[in-house]
Length: 423
Picture 1: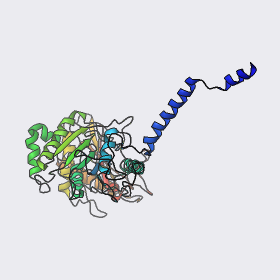
Picture 2 (picture 1 turned 180 degrees about the vertical axis):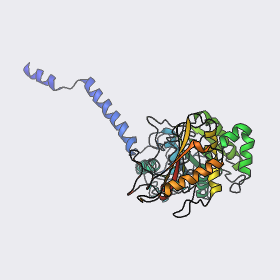
Picture 3 (picture 1 turned 60 degrees about the horizontal axis):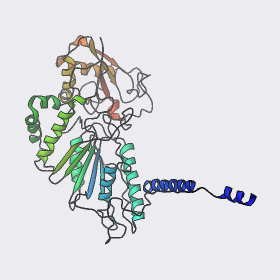
């Protein structure tokens, strides 16, 4: 009896065995797709004629160029090519469209002012078996996620249409079904669709698509049909990050402006209302380069405009502007918005210089110069106060200016910041 009792204690119940098997299967099911070691093509079929390849079809894209808003006024790009099913399938189509021994055709362009390329390693490619190919695809997805979410702008401003045109120039001549995928606010402060300085939203509300058509047809940088055969997907258009003010009430106008532009340029298919969830505090990629904000309604206390060197260029060590006409053009929307309601508000102008110079009055003199411009545009002189600092704009707001090792680029140091303050 004692022996049988011991045997019973050693026997694992059938229900426990089943539970262990279920847990093991569940863990393996999680691990395999997570690390790309599966020898399955998932919802694709295995290509029987090409070892290591999954089949692609006519709806798959064979080339991908991303245009990402890694700028100050746009949420940090969070497209996830690993866990988002639609993006994962999109990427796998491009990946398995690559020829044997070649990397897939993928490029990344910044929406920042000069539309520089963003580095992406081109070493990932299909291998001789599905498991190895899936592993390469997983690494590629991780590298794209990292590149678009962590690379800051390396120039000031934003130009989304310019980024799209740059993306078009990168598409190879042999591509049969390329995709330009955009992530970002869409609010540019330069280029043809300059929302910050050309009051495009106001013009659209007045003249609808005709007003926008007139603008794009008159610009020599654009040609009708220059994006023929291209598909554009746009994620999170109209979503903004601080310091840009919320413009949700203008999202549909913004989309219509881009739809009108893309139709003129001959885009084959455009889906510009795609979205991915952005949880928590919305912030941009960490960048020291500014983007001029878009103002449509009257200004509020705390609103700012930076007349940096990109906009207002002074002669060296002088308070004379080289380009007053340009300055007037850029500040006009801000001025007009301020003049809509000046009750209880005034403008504070603070001039900064590129390097610390104790006792320097150059910053104040340059602020006075910008004040004269604003007065000539209709702002009452008694609504403007001017100040100057003997250094660069502070990164830490607890101090008035910075002296040493400023992280700001030169064009952001030589600036006059206009701020709406309480009267």
